[in-house]
Image 1: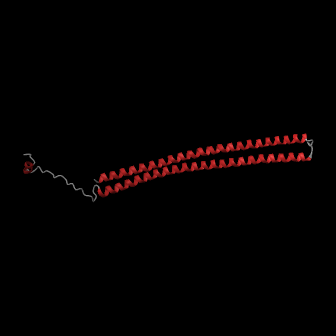
Image 2: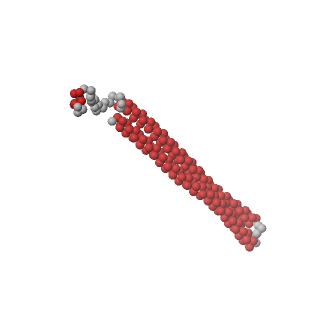
Image 3: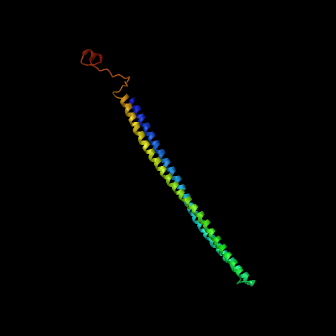
Length: 195
């Protein structure tokens, strides 16, 4: 009876350890999936940062081109009006050129700022992904250690139970030993049907 209880304790301990290890493995798997999603988001943010930078460069170039066209038109109009060499025309052309360069620089700056922000977001996502993977691995290790610890505790408890209530312990079985037959006596032989 006592050995059945000890076996049941051991089986329960093994089941508990398996369950704990399985839970740790599932947590590590979930962490890996979450980290992969974060990595994908980081890659998208990196691509968007590159696009932002390229878009800003194209916008800046377009502003410079539009500025040159405006200056060309101003020169043409001043020549048609007979004022191509006047100081007013030179001042106007200088202001137009400065505005174009300023607008172009602002476009580059804003695009680079958005690009840098997206790159920071990508970096942050990659760090979170790394941390999530680490946490999953740590949870798995903790579950394995907990499972082993649980098995050891179960073994110790079962051993203690067996020594206390098993062979030679204070637990007494209700069964009694079968009586011994004494066949040396002729009357016992007759009793058991040997004569």
